Image (cartoon, rainbow, N blue to C red; front, top):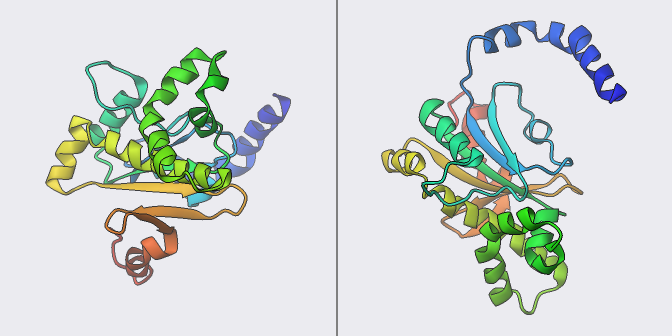
Length: 221
């Protein structure tokens, strides 16, 4: 904890003064560009991966980057999605999985979670992804099956996201886009789901047109 406290002091003395205008502007409100749903894993640093500033992303994190399907039950994930989509009007939602994910390892081997009943129940929201891997990954190595699960879980959570009323409404209006990413901790690579091709592509390939437009001064979609 002393290391964290020292970090706060450095932030106050060095970082904050250099970004004072930004923080003064943020004190008046927020207009994030995206709702970013990521795993709680300490190795996943969302701002570092995306090279974004405070105020750019509304971040929700939980074990396994999971989005429960919408029900009448109120939970923190559901409330955060509703607020970001309906109140903040974010134009993008990203669900980001990552390699070496302990939650996905648990989903693949639920018997190992008998001492963690709440974790085991939570990972029930990934069961459909596990079943896909069991059906389609029989001839693959354990490493390949795990990578398949990471991708299938992101796709599944995107499907769950579409069941949330405010998301469905915005999708019908055509003014929100959903994105599925997988981040590789070891290499730094990020792949993004292309729904038309039904596969994950490197981000520079998946967003080539948008990035080119941004580089020429246009507005990225």
